[in-house]
Amino acid sequence: MRKLLYFPIIHDQADMGSLETKISQEGERKYGQAAWKDHLKQVQISWNRLQNKIKQQFDDVPADKVKIYQDGLPEAGEIGLKIIKEVAKRGSKNYQIVEDLLRKGAQLEKAESKELLIQEYNYLSRLRDATTPVEQLNALLVYQEKAQELLNKRDDYIANRINITLKYDELGIAFFGSKHSIIDRLNKDITVTRIQEFKDKITIDLINQGL
Image (cartoon, rainbow, N blue to C red):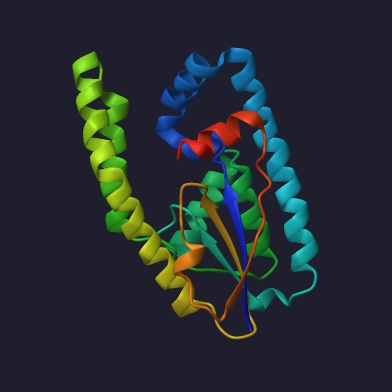
């Protein structure tokens, strides 16, 4: 039997890199500074709950039978491990959890297509760098037109990677943003347990918006 623990996640500030300032500004504008700060606090609390859930599951499975699939990571091996360590050092709770699992003997798998991620990043960068209202509107319209198509392609790629690399008697641990739709693309012999830990009001609102 093949098993997969699937965690729909909300990225924390350390995961966002150069986009973090723009996202925080938009969040504070829409929800208010106090509410947005409370949301960020709740995200961290949710990550702590998620970490405890993983520890409970991980103790029951040999470490060399565990494979990690990470949103936004198109590399494994030494390069993938270097990325994990760098982002974990910046304070990403997600990557700190992955780093800990790898230290215990879990295996990191390439989950994403580098080409598709570059395409999405380029659209988001144009949106981030737009300065005038016209530029912002044009960048938003272009991104909205391409976003779902890119997401579908990413989800197909991710599901295929899990289908190919997760072997019999192994446990996969998958961290992907809530906008992804991967589970229904997986082979039927993979038993999936979906664990939702991010439940604060703003998070639910963002999920309902498909963000």
